[in-house]
Image (cartoon, rainbow, N blue to C red; front, side):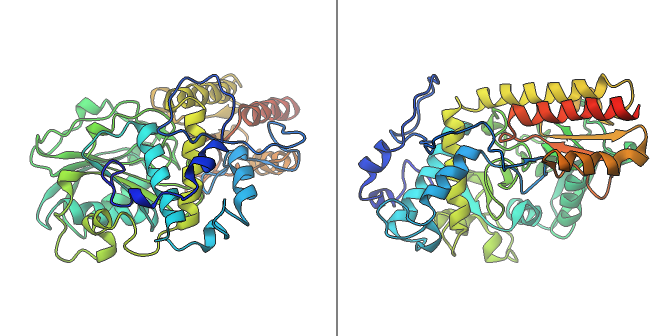
Length: 414
């Protein structure tokens, strides 16, 4: 669904000029928004950085959302503008929701600087559904494709692809417990592979690509699962054939899956492809082939606006780097009391796994942290230990409080 050529452009909100003028804030950011509509924080008698009754939520997903976004959504929950209803009650084909959908796409295109020739889809089924959608749309059952397995999610993607094409793992970090990513130039690719698939950031194991490989096949494309670092930093979208991401980590609530696909790859789906997995169907119907996750898309749109107001993804990345640096420095400076298993060059800015030297203290650590209003620090069941997910919406104060707690806990148990 392209904003510049959308056949829905005449369906903008009937009062959109007043609607846009209501959402202005004072900001030092010089980034231009794609329209005159800007983000309006909810005005309260007192708006602290973190409301006293809210915890610092370090969950891997669904994850914390910007408090300002939540307050705006709260203010519009019962009645959205002059629609006479909540967003949750709107027809997905009505003019009010069409306005919301188009603005969400427009702001995302601005955030990621998505070039012409790419379609943006708001779908359902999570990134896991894309494990099947990608091979079904990009190749035939006999086509070779390459997968780099850097953690649990890329491993699951590879296993699903085995049903629909001829995938090959060209590198796996399993033997090293997924703690590193080699130089991307060393991957031994199949020169005939239709695509090269990677997971840009492994949520469970905390490894993240700092550079991306180029497919050896000139006609092949790079495909990336970006679920857990989507919109956390700038990305050159033009280098990819497909980018997909579940929204529930960085840009919205669970239930929305975002797919960015190069237009020349659309319309190649295998004959057995279910209609709901066919990119062509969704592009032709502007993400409205069936009822979409309307409220989730609305929330994503608010987050996109918020990120633009922060100065765009370059500014967002700066904040994320600062938070990650503080936490990793605390772990590395603990003289072994805390340990992060991931090699430093590929440590994730989003998901920080760590263990205690005295593993018997991990339960007590998490229990005491929860009493201090820091929750969801337990590591994934497959790896254990702890994991702090510090996505875009995790404030610096949350990381600082966690580090202070870690230092105090060590002082009491070292």
